[in-house]
Image (cartoon, rainbow, N blue to C red; front, top):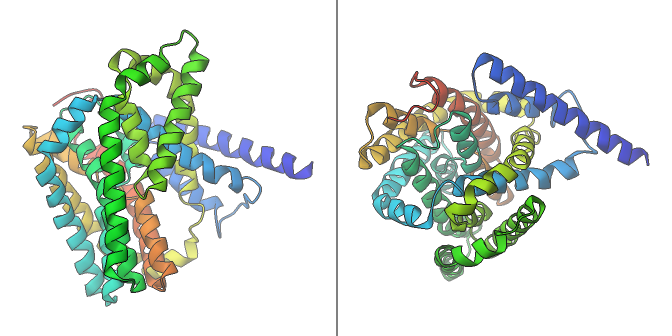
Length: 383
């Protein structure tokens, strides 16, 4: 009984605290993401408050928050638009890995890390945070901007590429046989391909499933399908976020607007928990020794992400301000970077963990601020 009461008290305090942070962010005209990240850091491991009773709930809730962010992002676009954008931005994806992974690898090499750890840092600096970027675009009113399809294409390409990168990284870190890594890559690529094809062909069936007069039924059915597809995608070695995004893509435009309205409050709740939870496992004292190296890494790879966004948006004919917005939106790193760091630490490279945690925190806080201020323009302005 006391444990239930403690759980409810801690969750209530977290939700009310996040609400106040959102209000403060609105008052000063910034995205609430940086404040939520700092709050999680302040009350997490080594922080001021122990959330031991709430953390078992916060973890799964944060995962659902990422899925809802990507589902809502997918609802903004159609399968045809995604296919055309992915085809157009294949070269942008190569620029992305060439600039950002290479920069991370070279900086890690400069810091004296062993080659396997350098490869892990390359992955950490390569992939942007889909969850943070999705919320940021919505917060800043840029979902309809001309540069946004380029940003989304890069996010999808990165998440798909992780299905190839992670098995290769694990093989390098653990000394596994090459054929084991190749088999895992083949399975992941096959899974992603099957899901991409299914997303295009499932639109009619999904539309029938969601065509119900009850908002409750639409909510439960869409959420259930999203969780199932995300789970299968994750089980097959790809990103659950890709599965959720593709479910949103598959929802017919005639239903998408209603789905956004129904899912909006639920997305806001779980997304807030995701951003708050991000800093919980990070011990602030562990960040100080690696802070100079993390700042160097963040400065270099923020510049390379700006270059990536500039090149990708230029491919879509976007003008200078839009190119800058695209690059700044991609600066934040997040969930995949943490996963890569955890894999490296488990394989016996602890130096990757603290550096990656500090780096991710810097970019996750600095990225939204940069995206907000890099181009001073009114909300909802399309350029």
